[in-house]
Amino acid sequence: MGKGMLIVISGFSGVGKGTVIKQVLDSLPSLYFSVSCTTRAPRFGEENGVNYYFITEEEFERRIARDEFAEHTRTFTNCYGTLKSEIDKPLSHGLDVLLELNVVGADSIKKLYPDCVSIFIAPPSMGALRARLEGRGTETPEEIARRLKEIALESGEIEKYDYIVTNSIARTCADEVVNIIRCEHMKVARNDLKNKFSLEE
Image (cartoon, rainbow, N blue to C red):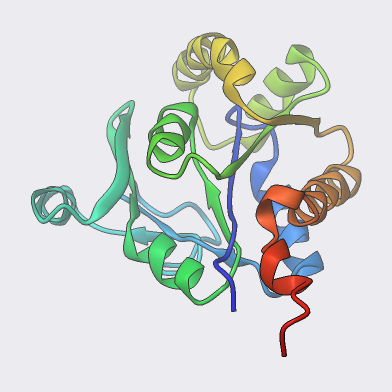
């Protein structure tokens, strides 16, 4: 059994990453979704251990001190982090692992796992993105303004990604992400050709 592949997905806030990722996971049942830790409160419908591990700031700091995070960052007033155990254990068992990260977290992961596949999900237009943010109804106008400023900074990091996929229709976007993952598995560099085509019994 070979080592699994690490896939990192990022995208602007409000771009619809959650919907796309859910459909990718439905299409690839063996894909392991790495659940991140966060200090923010759960949103409506979110479950602990499914969407995030919702922990206190004190617990977050303790995990940093124990070097349990592969990456961690603070966005506005909340902390987010990916546990090393959520990556290394499934990879070692041959499972592909999917991470959803912001550009800062993705950059840290790419330094630790340089052979990971990085995908950025983009909106069809900035106008459409603003409409999605306002339509969520979960943030104040001031918070949306901060999100838009963050988006302007994040846009300069897109060129560091391997792929960019536009989310005009979630199903189409998810299918394109699935195709990327499948194609990456067909790369010669990811295959053990010596053992696969060995003539030795």
